[in-house]
Structures are given as C-alpha cells and as structure tokens.
Length: 310
Image (cartoon, rainbow, N blue to C red; front, side, top):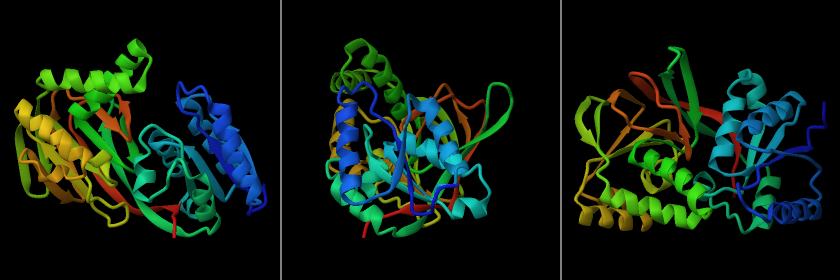
C-alpha cells in the first residue's frame, strides 16, 4: 500500500500526436515544481486504461489523476464503479485535460493549456460528489450489460459522425480534415432513424435525426445539464432542412443549440429507448456496439468523488 498523500497519475496520450513526450514533460515539471509526490503509469491504448486504473485502485492510491480526455475519464469511472462503495468513496478522482474534446473538463473550466492552474486546484483537494448516467442494454450475445457515463450518450447522427471521423481520419490522417469531411457528408446525406422513445409521460414515435442524453454538457447539445442535480437533460432533434441544419451548427458552436426550432429539450431521470433502428450509439465521445432491442438510460446520483476547482 502507498502513502495516502501520493498521487497515482494515469497518463493517456492523444492518439496520433507526435509530441506525447513533450506534453508529459511539461506536466511532470509542473507536478515536481509544486512538490507533488506521485507515481505515473502510461496507457498504450484505450484497452489499457481500465487495466492500469484497476492496478492503481488495488495498490491503494487515494488520489488518482487522469491525464486524458472524455473517453479516458469514462474508462476510469467505470473501473471505480466496480469496487465497493466504501472503497470508492475513499478515492478522489482528478483530471488534467489531454483529449480531443475535453467536454467534461471544459464544464469545470479546466484548461488544457494551463496545467499550472489545474494542478494548483487539484492540490487544494476540493471534492464534490458527481452523478453518473448509465445505459443498460442487451448485447448481441443476449447478455445484460451496462456502461456508465459522465458526459453524454448520443443516438443517431452524432454517433454516426464519430464513426465517420474515425473512418476519414484513417483516409486523411488529419483530425481537422476528417471533421470537415464528416460535416460535409452529414449536410448532404439525410440521416434519419425510426425511433420510439419514452421520456417522462411523453412517447415519441417518429423519424429522428439525433438524440443526446447528457449528465454533462453533451458537446453543446445539452448545454444546461449539470453533473450533480440527479437529472438527465435530453435533446431530441427532428430532421431540419439543409439551411436549418447549417443554422443549427452555428447555434451549436455559439452555445445556443436549444434555440433551434428542430430541437426538443426534456429533463428526466430515465429515458426508455424502445426502438432506434440502425442508429449507432456513442458514449462519452466513443462509439459503442449498438444495443440489441430496447435499452434504458438512467442516472445514479453522487457516486464519484471528483476534484473540482475553487
């Protein structure tokens, strides 16, 4: 067992970035300047994050800091949810943003380019219990599964864009080019999915472009969601015309997504997806295997001890 003041730092380098070593050297120098006592482990890929997180938990680290993005953070909280509540409550989870989107970090004003400020905040050890959303589903082997999320679940077009970005990234080798090309394809390809949703007392049974269920800001699609009120924000988007779609992208970028006429917002503790034909599902920025049959998304309140800024 390690001393309680020693941090376990899990470094998750950005995929395809050449300056991985320089990035870690910068973070390491800030930690040492602040006198932080820590041990660092580095993930090779997304599969290794859960293994290394489990190792840090089992070795008794009480402050575990993820240097990564939304997907790495997702792996970390899912590992924490596998341990007994008493042990989980004794572990404080911190974040130094180092991802592509960093949406959950942005909610807390954690700036990827200001490592000094982030580490200073982490040192104050200000803990807040945060909520986790949970998707409960059946896989293709008819096994009942679940997965937790801090930020959001996307069903439909947004998950499709995640898939397109992954495919075009292989083609172009550039994150920016892959995003632009994905948007271009989206503008001229009608992405609609037959869905049947139950949200509170409302049943929505029609063609839908995309659904975002957020415990956090949901990449701008659930901008009013907060990860500590015991509620999920849901944005259901019907298919707009091309001109309205371009307007919607502008409102999304400018933080006014809910003002669009095709966006229908809800707030709930549970959403039942009875049907979502051929719609892909993404969780915290990563595509997941599409559930088989109906699935449910709900919220568990105040289950993770998270280190927050002043």
